[in-house]
Amino acid sequence: MSEPAVIAPPAFTIARPQANEYAPYYDRYISLIPGEDILNTLDQQRRQMMLLLSGRDDEDGDFRYAPEKWSAKEVLGHICDTERIFAYRALRISRADIAPLEGFEQDDYVRNGPFAHRPLADLVEDFIAVRRATLSLLRNLDEAAWVRRGIANKNEVSVRALAYIIAGHELHHRRILEEKYFAASR
Image (cartoon, rainbow, N blue to C red; front, side):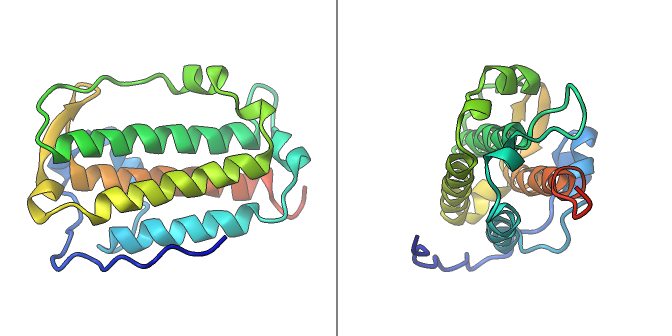
C-alpha cells in the first residue's frame, strides 16, 4: 500500500490543551503525549501500530491475557471505535456545533462489534483508515477551530484536547498490547 501525499502542516502552532479544556479523567491520556506536535505524533502512532501488528496472525489477535479480558482484536476494534467517536466530536465542535454530544459505553461497543470474527489483518487496515481520516480532518482545521469548545459526555472539551485524547488513548492501549498481549515471553 502506497503512502498518501504528505499534507503540509498548518502555518500556526497547535498548543497543548490546558487543564480547563477537558475533564480531569482525560489527563490520564493527554499526559502520555509529549511535546506540541500532535499531528506528527498521530502520524507516527499509525506507523508504530503497524510495526507492532505486522506479522501477527489471527491466533495472536484472538489472544486474551486473562479470562474476561478483551482479545487483541477487540482492543484494536475498541481503539478504532473510540477514535471515530472522538474525531466525530472534534468535527462537530470544530464546526461550532453547540449541541451537546452524548457519551458511549465502550463495553457495549466491543460486545456488539464484529471484531472477534474479523481477520486481524482487516482490523489493522481499519485502524490505518481511521487514523488517516482523523489526520485528514485535523490537518484541515483552521486556527480558530482548534480552540473551540463544546460539550461531550456532559463535559466541556476543546478540539485540541480531543486530538491529544485520541493520541493518548491509542498509546495507552498500544502499551497494553505490547506488555500483555505481545510480550516476548508469551
